[in-house]
Structure formats: C-alpha cells, structure tokens
Length: 454
Image 1 (cartoon, rainbow, N blue to C red):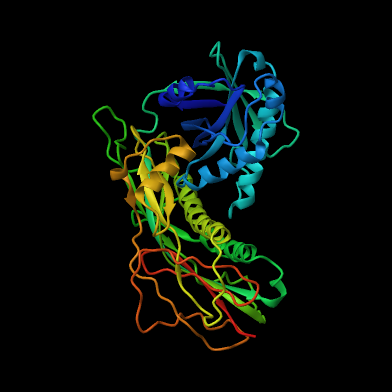
Image 2: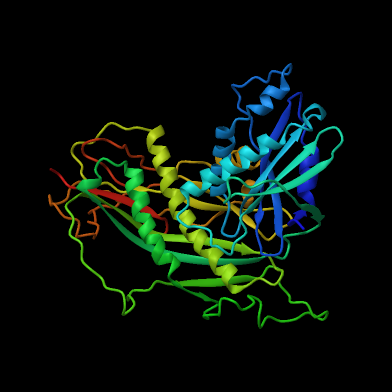
C-alpha cells in the first residue's frame, strides 16, 4: 500500500488549466505538508519558462530527456523561501503530450532527486529519522488527462518508484492551525584568520549552524505552557455541538526560551581565536508556522516553528549576499564599519485558506514588485492590499570608525551621533580588502560585519 496524498481541489483545477501552448511538456512543483499517515498538497506552481530557450517542436522527446534540472531546482529554492514553517516542496509534476506519455518517468526521477538535494544543501536543519522521506511525482497527459502518481525515497539514491493515491478534497486547509512567534536574535560570528580563504557567505553559514543548535535545544511555550511533545496540540480545546474540536482560524502564541546553562555533564572550554573580523546579526524576526488540523501533535507544531525560525534567518542572509553580487559598489576606504538593512518579511494570504505565504522585501522595493514576484514564482495573483508587512523599518545606523584590534570580544555596536532615517536599502560590496557590513534596527533583522584594520 503506497502513500495517500490529500489534494486541495483548486490544485486539480490549476493543473487542468495549464496549456502546453505547443510545448512538449510543462513541469512544476507540488507544495504541502507531510504527516505520518498521509501527505497534504495545498498548492501547485509551474516552473517559469526560460525566455531565451526556444522549444524545438520537431524533437520533443529529446527536449524531455534534457529537462533543465538546474533551472527547475533554482525555482524550487526560490519557492522554498516563500513557504512558512510546516510547508515544503513535496514533489514535482509534469504535463506532457500524448507522444511522451511513456517517456517521462526517468526525467521525473532525476528531477525529484535534484530538487531535494539542492534544498537540503541550504538548510540549517536535518530531517529526523521518524519523518517521511518519500517525495511525490505526478504525471498528467495533456490529451487524456490521465494521472499517474508515484513516490521515491529521496534518502535512498537507488529507490524505485512506488504507487501512490491522489485524492482531491475541497477546503483542505480552511481549518489549519497557525502558530506565531517573535524571536529576538543577537548572533555574533567571529571570522578567524584561518577561515579567511572562505567566502563571507560560507563563514556566515558556519556561524548560523552553531546558532541553529541553540534553537533546536530551546524550550517552546505554546500559549504560555510547556506541553508534552506527544500530546495532541488541540488537547483541552472547546468542542462543538457535534463533538468536533473547533479549530477555525485558531492561532497559537509561541515563546522561545533559549537555554543558557549547559548540562552538568557537559564540559565547556574557552577558545581563543585571532580574528580578521566578525559578523553580527541583531533584531527581531516574525515567524509563522502551520499544521494540519487532523489530530496534530505538539512536536509537529514545535518542529514547524523551529524550522521557520532557522529558515527565515538563513534566507535573509542568502538574499542579501545575492543582492551584493548583483549590485557591487566601489570600496569605501574611509569606513570600517557600516550598518545596512536586511530584507524584511511580508505575508500574503492564500484564497480559501488560513495559510499565508511569505516573501522578503528590501526598503526600496515596491508592493508591485512583490506582487510580480509572486506571479513569477508561484503563478499566483495576489492583491496589493492583502500584503502584510510583518516587520517595519525605522532607522539604519552607520558608524564610520572603530578601534583597531586583533580580537572580536567586544560585540557592542557603536551608536552614531545622528541616526539616519531611511527606507532605502543600503547595499554593500564584498571586497577583498576592507569590508563593509550590515545591520538592522529593533524591528527588522539586521546583520553587521566588523572588520579590523591590519
């Protein structure tokens, strides 16, 4: 018996409305949530076509064999940033012409493994042994509309396809449970001289990996209470007249308590490093997670929240590094420390669902650009008035100098005499010599790089 996929009816409508428009095939992503008994698919989105590629209609089979995995995996990476805690890319779909109806499986297999490998590389967390490692592939024939659903164990490179059930349900996520949390972070990442050959992005990722362990080991209060992880999340909730738990629009408040003391059996040693600089992340991040309403466990909710915390911090850093590569600015030799605003989070509701997707917005980006990004990445039209900016930008502070030292013990930011009020992102360059830095104010996450003069 294979896995069962419960699918939102609007997903079926979306897939049936996709027109090949003379192409041999169209591929895309399936988005949803895993559970021990069954998986839930709440959204599907086609991979945007490469404009520079012209389909060769005379040889459609060759085109299917050469499915652009790099382009598809990059789309999956972009989409994964827009998913709150609890949601992930569950699999891929492909719609082909009748002529290709028997030649799609190898392409789908390669694609599902490539997508999972690419996303795993960027995560600060790992799947547990108890979690489902099967991912779904869906084939639809554009002529007959016949559907073939199969799964692969992405943790086993030699796994073969298994049959799976694909069942539609109306209003699948209308009563899903939401969890909200604000996490204040102050992460100090020293950049040792031994790691000077690494890129700034890699050094930051290594530092975030250490911080991620603290988040994993933290205590999570749900509505002010510590609950046993195996308890039902809805335990103690009011029952309706029919005996069902009332869960519509139910939101849980989550608080994170970071453990400061180590266990008595854990020895701690001090490490002295000669550092060429440091990276500081400071601010407050708004986090959200969602779990299905079919007997959810506390551990499922906590796990979804943990992963949203880790994802949103890592994603912002990655987005900023990408922005630096695209917008290089001449080196400022008279400044050794600068503060720049990181992208802040924007939430957008899904029609007919309690779930909100997210995106990240720099200060100089307009609401129209966010809307266009949703259309491009998720093939989903949103209303500008529905945009919910979770974090507001107040000020960006810049400091022009700091003491020349060979250590990174002092992590307190110097306060400028005149803070600069701005809503425009201060882009920084990544230079070989003197390096600039990022930061943010209290309401938006920030990152600052402190580099010491030679």
